[in-house]
Image (cartoon, rainbow, N blue to C red; front, side, top):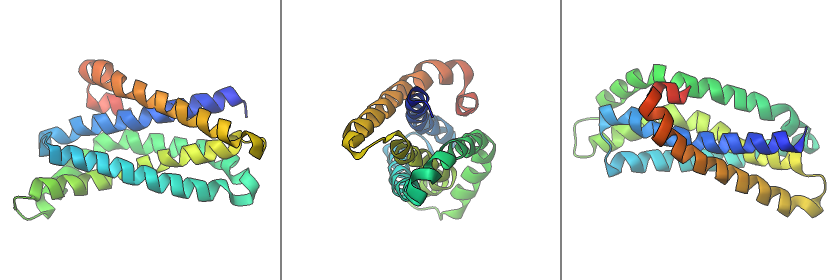
Length: 183
């Protein structure tokens, strides 16, 4: 696999994580508002899903001396794309279910938005979290280069996240809408 394509892949998936996170807030807002509680759930679920993805991605990357990483990386990204594209279709029914599933309490918005966020966003973000360890395993040629490979991958993933912060907020959400931004 060409190194440039691997680096581009990490950039785009980093961009996708933040784009999904910010667009999630727009999708949740009509049902749960945009309060600190809702944002806490979004950020918490994103971090939880990424942490699980890093863990499971690392385990997967080490299978068969890295051969699984080469076979699994792009199918995982493809499945993630499908899951993200399905978010707008399943969002409303899940939001309505989540709101009805939680008894009316002072904490109902918090709990209902947490439930909805967990159901809709954990799987795709967990899979996106798997990309970095898989890409790192593919990028290693020797252990002597491990630090620079991981550093480059995380720098590009973070640069992608920065771009993924601005494009949805300044371009795609205002001009296309939330549904199209997920696509």
